[in-house]
Length: 317
Image (cartoon, rainbow, N blue to C red; front, side, top):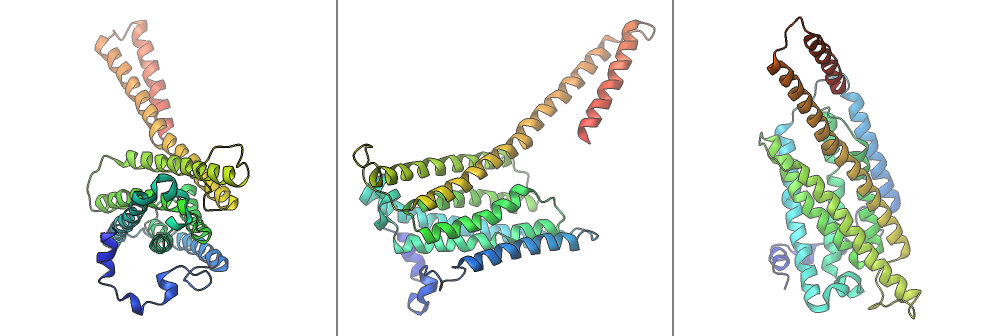
């Protein structure tokens, strides 16, 4: 039983809400056409890069309080929406099992569609993340801008396709966002948290799970529709080949980009730190030996120290 949803709905006068706000109706619900999505994406780019130009010769803004409020809102909102999706899916799973909750069209209930619509709208509010970066004059990476814009387009595409398994990326992404936005909220207030690296690990893990679910759904779709007498299967799977290709393609691009980010941010930096530590240890060992200034060893020590200092400083620039 979806107790949380029932409790929340008891405070909402659902009878007064227009139908196109309570359920997704292409062409009637907000942001439900390709021209609107395209214009929103173009506006996002224009505002981001326009703001960066405006701030180029200005001092960065701190914006601590609004930044923390923004992140706390997204963390709390993601938690509530994740819980709503989770209880709806769990209710379905108890009745029809794993295959059914991923593939049967009836498992894509009206409530689940509403949650997917709300998740889609979240993606536009998350554009504000980038606005804060530009106002604070923080570096803008390709990964950040691409991920925000592409995720909004992907959420819209999935909502229009109505494939049952689309709840999986929404649920996992919301789970990551609960922790990620809380991290930004806490650290903006001065907290020192040690688990930033593990957030990236969770993001990479979610992409792998999503691709595995996409492969499961695609297999059943192909086996049922194209090779029913050759491949074993439990039945068909809601969705289209186009949805599978576009969705998997975008998620795979995220996986590659986040793996590169992880390597550059954590693996390569860790390796650089080890090299610096080893260099310092080598120098200390020479110092402990205290060679005479008139020996060949002392000349070697002076040359090594000068060379290492040059190289270490060069790698830091």
